[in-house]
View: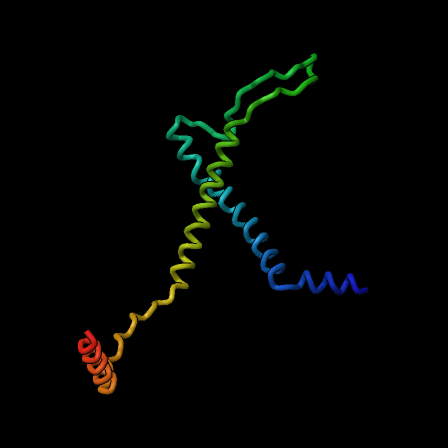
Length: 140
C-alpha cells in the first residue's frame, strides 16, 4: 500500500498535473495549427506556385512491382513534400508560442518606479562633512 500512496502523492503534485494539462493543450493546439497550415495557408501558396500540393511532392526511387493486378512490391519514395509541410507546421507553431510568451511577459511586466532622489543630508551631516573637509585640509 505504501507504493500506491507514494505514486498517488507523486501524480497529484502540481507540477505533474500542470505538465499533463500542458501536453493536452499542446496536442490540441498542434492539431489546430496543422489544420490551419493544411487547409488555410497552403492552398493559396500552392495556387501561387501553380497548383502544387506540397504533401504530394516526392521522388520515386523504385517503382512498384506488379504481377497482373496484384502489387508484389510497393514503390520506394522520398517524400520531401511531406517534410516541407511538417517544417512549415513547426515554424508556425514555434512562432505562435513565441508570440504568446512575449504577450504573457509584457502582461507580467511590473512597472518599476523611478528611484526616488536621495534625501538631502541633514544639518548635522552637513556640519560633520565640513569639519571632515577642514581637518583634511589642515592635515596637508
